[in-house]
Length: 214
Image 1 (cartoon, rainbow, N blue to C red):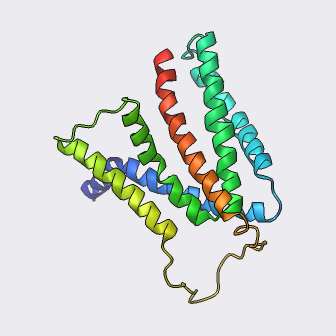
Image 2 (tube, rainbow, N blue to C red):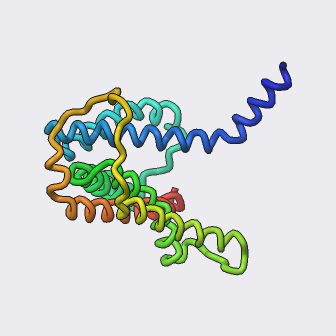
Image 3 (cartoon, one colour):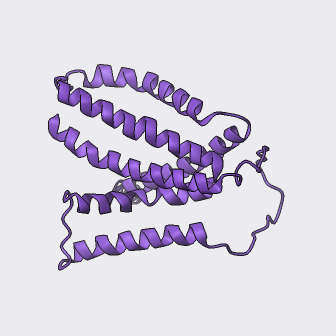
């Protein structure tokens, strides 16, 4: 009995990162649906982003102050400019475009396009020579194949229109709201989604430089 429990704990620790990634994606999906419902009821995306970060700042402030106050580097001018640029690009610009595109498109499109961020980050890192790809080794080939499959999967889910799926029973959750706004500016929303994914990738890459400063 004890050996079985220990085996389960060992398996859980081994696959803990994978389980957390799956749970994170589930939470993202729920967030998309709830956010779209709030937009359909009149919530402004810019107000939503502002409230979101005010709340997040208040929640994280005690942890940052008490747990990491002795670990913070000296705030130089270069570090201040880097943090300001990262905040403008990765928080203000990216998330405002991101949630505005959700208002104009759908959670399905947005969740699919978000999966391209890893591939876009890899491509930009290769272009900027921050990532080396050795096509003669299995690891380099796997990175290329993974990037191509990721982009192909996203394009397939976004562009392919299959048969209509009907509910077998009554839905458990009903979210009422206007659906005409979603398809009114579909092209604008798609372009905003692509732009937010690109800026999000740039934001990830820029964090490498700020880590070097600290």
